[in-house]
Each structure stands twice: as structure tokens, then as C-alpha cells.
Image 1 (tube, helix red, strand yellow):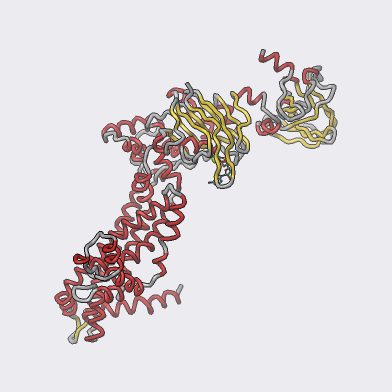
Image 2: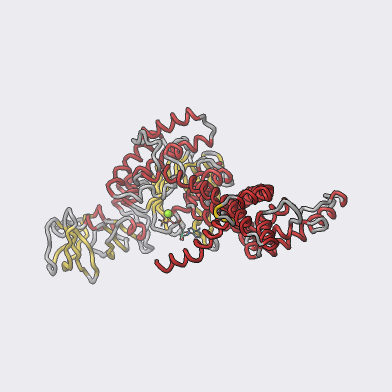
Amino acid sequence: MFPAMTAVVLLYALPLVRSLASAFHGDDGLTVAHVVRAFTLYGRDVAFSIGVSLGALVLIAIASIAIAGYLTLGATRWAVRVLRWLYRWPLFIPFVVAGQLSRSFLSTNGMMNTVLIETGLLSAQSAQSFLDWRGLILTFAWKQIPFVTLLLAGAMAAVEPSHSEAARNLGAGRLRALFHIVLPQAAPTLWVGLILSLVAMLSVLSVPMMLIAGNPTMMTSMMAHRITYYGDYGVANALGLFSYALTAVTAWVYLRLTLARETQR
Amino acid sequence: MNALSLSEVTVDLGPRRILERINLVVTPGSFTCLLGPSGCGKTTLLRAIAGFTPLSSGDIRLGERSITELPPEKRHTAMVFQSYALWPHMNVGDNLAYPLKLRGIPKDERTQRVATMLERLALGGFEHRSVTQLSGGQRQRIALGRALIIDPPLLLLDEPLSNLDASIRRSLRGELRQLQKSLGLTTVMVTHDQEEALQMADQIVLMREGHIVQVAPPASLYQQPADLEAARFLGVDNTVACSPQDPSALAGAKTLGFRTREARVDVAPSVNALVRRGQVTECVYTGDGYQIGVTANDQTLFATARTPVEAGRFVTLQVPESALIPFGPDHRYMPSLNAQEHTA
Ligand SMILES: Nc1ncnc2c1ncn2[C@@H]1O[C@H](COP(=O)(O)OP(=O)(O)OP(=O)(O)O)[C@@H](O)[C@H]1O
Ligand SMILES: [Mg+2]
């Protein structure tokens, strides 16, 4: 108990508090100058980060519900088996490699456009690069969907099969059984998956660095930039503060939702 | 017209054949029990009727209509699961209203019908309770109510009473049966409790290893089980080889079966009875008498007595002819001369 606590304090809590403190620490003591500077310099990047993260989360939620739902309630046995085997492999691909893959997939001369042009769905002139916010959303989603699906499919499998069978017996089709019976019971796990994905997206440096050339970009890029070029830890930590705030808000919303449900029981 | 008819229903799960060529008809408004030992395929048969287990071959008809190819949601059967399967994220009222909601019934009418159903289940005012806070018996009723609220043409019950303790079970048996009769509901219930089946059913379907062994009303099943194994399952716990001095009406039988409570060791000898002499090996109090173990011809038989009998004493075990169940050399039930007279 005691050594564990000490380790947590020394290795996690202390550095966190130090970095938070340095966000408010200037030459002449306590100051909000860093925060203000971070916001005036990088306000657009903060907004961009929020937009991209939300976009990716929506995509992740939709895809993972669809995949996990099919894994749980799918009627075609072989399709379920193939999907179960297929969906996991991006889990084992690091973010850097994911970034690399999407660069070669989404650029103007990338694989996606090549295929689209060759199949005649797109004319060569109107081919454009997806290496902007869209590429970022797609890459983050691609990387995180298997993870959230894994969690969600587990939670859905833990819902007693008789619950959805009872719904179907009383007249609900598969889709209704999914949205009325299975998903509500697995929802807390979906929230956990989405929050963990948000944290991952807000902390990944490689993907935005590889996909986004100019401004605006994700906060992580700007933090790295601030530190490597200016050695400016104050503003970097103030940017970090925004990331904490964002995840904290989400976590709070999640806790509110689950607690409301618990007290309802 | 039959409410439900199964013809040649066969089910395979993986490589195993679970049900083999099941034929069964259920008349409208009747109460049918599927009875059999654990693992014989009762639940599988019920799930096949509800549409959760695909058939390898055969046909299931609800009324005139074949439902074999329909998905569960289009079959309009109402099933009560052994675990009740109440949805924990909905309160009692929402659980009951869900089937109505699926049918597009407006909110006011839903509320009204849920309230009526709760009254009928003697759970009036429970709408806003959480289903996780109900007792086993209350859950069972809510599960039943959720199935009944849509006036289903066929009610399917999978051991609905087995999770309850003995006293509630006994009272719910009566309630369930009365409800079923008053609504004229065609019902198929799975149970492995023979007493439950005998008390509730109009027709009992005795199953074993994926086959139907016998379909009969409770009294005939009890008195004339199809074969020796069925008899044992129905509480015929003694069997003896038939000998020439046994009642003549039973001539031709190879084996005679009888229930312990029909055999006495403390009555005056009579002519038309099975008689075996033997030595008492044990005497156990059973509440309404004593169960006596008797060793006769190297075989232990059981009988009852009103007063205790010392171990080691020699006694005469007697079973009246009417309580003897004859079986032929193939272990199948063999109608005796008497039984034939009775049925004639
Ligand atoms: N999903 C399945 N896959 C393969 N075999 C199964 C499956 N479900 C059940 N079985 C097998 O089918 C047989 C019949 O099972 P079923 O559940 O119908 O028995 P039951 O008569 O309802 O028994 P109980 O009284 O114990 O509930 C059993 O031998 C069981 O092992
Ligand atoms: Mg069963």
C-alpha cells in the first residue's frame, strides 16, 4: 500500500503538478501570462484540436458500434468470424506507422486517388490531397476504432444473450435489439473507450507532424515546437493545460452520466 | 385446427444431433409440458419454436401458417426465459411497455395497459420500480406480464418456476394455471419437475435424448409410462422380475414396476397382490410414515410402513395388483388384462 502510493506520487502526481505549476510560473512569480500567450498564439490550434478530436470520436463511435454490434448480433456466422479476425490488426500498428501509411494512402498521388481515378470514379484533375484535417480524422479513427471496438464488443458480449433474445421474441428486429437493449447496457464501456481515445489523440505527436505541414495543427505539434525551438516550457505547459482541461471535461461528463444511471437504479 | 404443430423437426448444433424427428400437435387453449431429464433437448425445442435455433429439417406451423422460415421477431410467440431476461436499464413500467412501443401503440394507451397488467399480476403501482430491486417471484411475474401484454397466440415458458423456492413455486403454479385458463392461452412449458408437469399440464410430452418418448395426459403417463426408463423418471423406483405366482392378469410381463408408497409391509396378506418376503435392512422416517428397505432375493426393494420396523426382521412386502406396472421383455409397457378392461 505505502510503497505503491509513494511510487504513484513520485512518478505521476509530482511531475504533473510541476508541469501545471510551471504553466503559471513566470520570472516574477505567479502569472497567467503563459496561458494568455498560449491562447493568443495558438487559439486556432486549440480549436482545431477540439474539432479534429470530436470528428474522430464521432467516427470512432459510429464504426465501433457498427462492428461490435455485428459481432454480437450478426446472423451470418462466417462473416462474423472473418470480421472478428480482421478488425483487430490496426491495434498492433504504432501511430508513427499509421501516419506513414495514411501519408501514402491519402496524398494527391496516393493510393486512394489512384484507385479512384483508375476505376473512373474521379478525374485526374480533380484529385486532391487529403493530408489536412480530414486525413487526421481518418487516421486517428482508423487507429482507434479497433481499440474501442475491442472494448465495446467485450461489453456487448457480457450482456446476457437472453436480453436481446427477449427483445427479438417480443418483436424487435436486430437493429432495435442493438440500440434499445444491448448498446444502453454496454454504453459505459463505450464512453471509457472514447475518453481513452481522446487522450491518445491529444498526446500523439507523430501523426500531426507527418500529415499536417502548416497551420493550424494539433496542440501536441505546437507544444513540441515551443519546446524544441524556443525552450519555452511555460507556454508549452499552458498548452498542455488545455489538453488536461479537455479530457477532464469529458471524464466529468462521463462520470455524470454513469452516476445518474446508478442513482436511477 | 391445431394451435401449434411440429412435423419431423430435427435440430443439429455443430456436429451433434440435438433433436431428431419431433412430431407434436398442440390444441388451442391447452397447456403442454415438455418433461425430461437434463440435457434431453427441452430448451432447444422451445427455442426452435421461438425461432432462435434453426431447424436442419422439418416444419413448424402456428395455426395454418408455417413459421419455419420466419425470424424470431415475426413469429409472434411470447417466451419467458428461465433467467427472466428483464432489462436492467429500464424500470418495470418500461419493461412491460416495450412490446407495445414496438407495435406503435400511443403512450397513453401503453401506460393504461401496463397499469392494468400490473394490477392483474398483483403488482399494482410498481411502474417506477427498478427491476433489479424485485424479488425472484416478482421478477417472474413481470417477465410473464411482459410476454402476456401483447396477447400472444402462443406462450412459451422455459422452467419459469425453477429459480423460486418451494412454497412460492407451489402457489405460482396454481396462479399460472388459472391465468392460462382464464385467458385461454395456448401454452408450452418446459420443466424437469415431474410433479409440476403432472399438476399443471393437459398434455405431457416426455422427452429423452432428443426424442419424444411419450405424449399423454398426466394420469395415463403416470399410470402407463411407455417404458421402464420413463417409469423410473416418473418415480417408479422398484422393479422386480415377474414370477409365476404373481397376479395372473400380469402373465406375460417380464418385469413389474411399482412406487414405494404403493408397497406395504404391515398389511394382512391378500390374494391379488405381488408378494415378496425379505429382511428389513433400513428404516427411514419420511414425514408421513417410514420408508423401509427390504432385501428379497438379493435385491433391495422399498416399501412404506406407518410404524417403524427394526432392521433384521423378516417381513412380507405387498403391492396391490392395481399399482403394478407391467413391462414386456423389450422393457416397453405391456397393457395388462386388467388395464385393457379399464380402458374398454
Ligand atoms: N449452443 C449449443 N451448441 C451445442 N450444443 C448445445 C448447445 N446448446 C445446447 N446444446 C446441447 O444440446 C443438448 C440439449 O440441451 P438443452 O438445453 O435443450 O437441454 P434441456 O433439456 O433444456 O436441459 P436442462 O433441463 O438442463 O435445461 C445438451 O446435450 C446440450 O449439451
Ligand atoms: Mg433447459
